[in-house]
Length: 350
Image 1 (cartoon, rainbow, N blue to C red):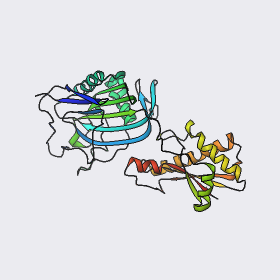
Image 2: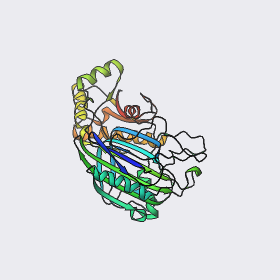
Image 3: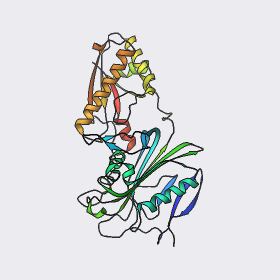
Image 4: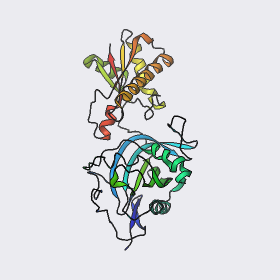
């Protein structure tokens, strides 16, 4: 009996032989995952390697993703350095982390995906193996790809999902590919490696697979940048207004070009009311370190002020930056939609 990997392509799909024995076999060893994380599901375009279990998944309706196209290294302080060649893409980003069935190899998993993606019209952008991915068997590659994910919820000391890409891997393999589908360009980032890191111990020697699918859709058309009149009304009624249409790089404080329309409306608001002074307050979700989030939110607020003062002639004393970090959420941080609402910039009347 053969295993199968399914890729749905523009409304149709087919099955591909992935080799091995026993379809839909999962490990039954004590303490190891035997079922998907609650609510976990495959991407509608690219399914799992048969028999794999979803440890965690995450969907970001609009975000960016840096696709490595050359080895990933680290600086003298051990911090990951962006690869010399890379491609930054934006759109809907879906991350799914799997553990493959026992008895498989990273090569077998990668080849299965690679063959099926090729049949679906995807073109390879970059592949690497072990040290060709960067020093120490691609250790820095996994550090670059790693990000906080929802927990699997196992009862052990260490959560399977939290440590899914943490530590060292043997026979690490990576594939990046691009497909042009009717709905637009789709990018795939795929990592597979055998864990040599003994935390959690139950996953030692297992094949972990990290699949990212980036669909290059435009930003949500339902997002409306408030105009000066609407902002003035909201501030009069509530003393504050949240700004739609302000965008930053992930974990960065530089304003993206598409923020210009919202900034212009803030400048218009201040021009129309010369006596108005504002606190510009940055907010983040709860992902990451508390102090780092506060600092990031403060820098983002300062970027908004810098844009208003240097490009729109607003007097600096009328504005003051403040970073609230994760301290004042307006929605749950348990979902991506909620986290997106919490990542915001507000204007507060002084």
